[in-house]
Amino acid sequence: MKRNHPQPIRFKSLSEAMSATGFPPPQHPLIALVNGIDNELEGTPPQHSQMLSFYKISYRMNIGGTIPYGRTQFDYLEGGLFFAAPTQILGSDEPQETPAPGCLNDQFILLIHPDFLLNYPLAQKIRQYNYFSYTVNEALLLSDKEKKIILSLFRNIEDELSNRLDEISQDIVVSQLELLLNYAERFYKRQFITRKPASHSIIEKMNALLDAYFVEAKSLNLGLPSVRYISSQLNLSPGYLSDMLRGISGLSAQQYIHEVLIEKAKEKLLSSGLTVSEIAYELGFEHPQSFSKFFKTKTSQSPMAFRTSYN
Image 1 (cartoon, helix red, strand yellow):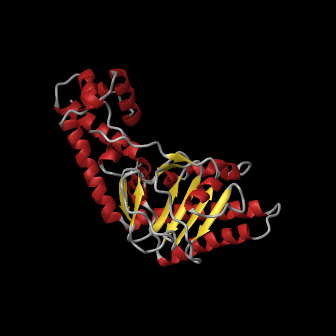
Image 2: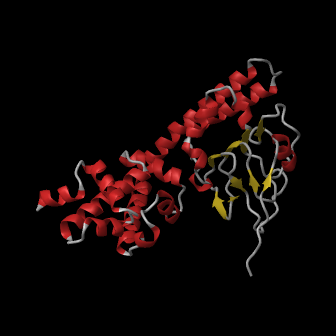
Image 3: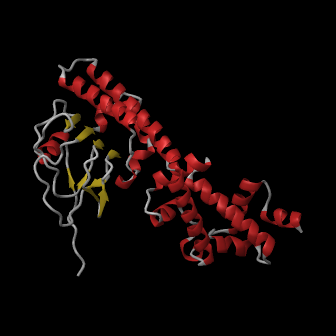
């Protein structure tokens, strides 16, 4: 019997989110910071999934345990820095042990309503940080030096919010937040580099998936291979896959797939008697004209001109 999953809770305000966790209302209605690293806290996370209406940045120390994300559990043994954006769903409605009071200790949690950033360039720029679309198992793992930088920025924001707010307070908090996000961007790029063996393993699996995609003729039913399809097969988010590939090869996931498509097209043009239309169909293009345009854009030759030049 198929199990019915209740709709995730959507908090209309930060105050509601804080109350559901057992914390008092935030000092500012549009931004809240919970410091469980420097303080003993008694709050517990909600026992139901939630759809965010705000940005969430959280850091958890090396204390182990698991964190629910959608229908899965992430083993958070190493701790890490995690980002989530409005409309993302966090938590789970699957049966699980009730967290003990104080389970938010050893964490920093920063909640930012989008309205807090209005009239600041960061309101638009924050959408360009791809890591807000990463899944929880793609958290940023920090070195000791990086950890000190990030925790100092959390504490700077906390200090500013704890003081009497004035007309400059928001400017200072936004500047500290942007600095934190820029450091996270830098540290993620470092993580892609220092984890090259794991990244190369992912690339090998991606190549195998793309080979199988065409050998098994999935293109006939699914069309062109998409970033979303490949990333789902690798259990990665599209954004993380793209950023990881860009850090290793200089190509986004879409560009990488296009390079594979071109090589497959060249192979078929030179080693088979298939027509251009038949090749386009086998590769997953809906129209031969689309394939011809794509091929010429990538190689500066039409498919027929390419075939003729080698014959």
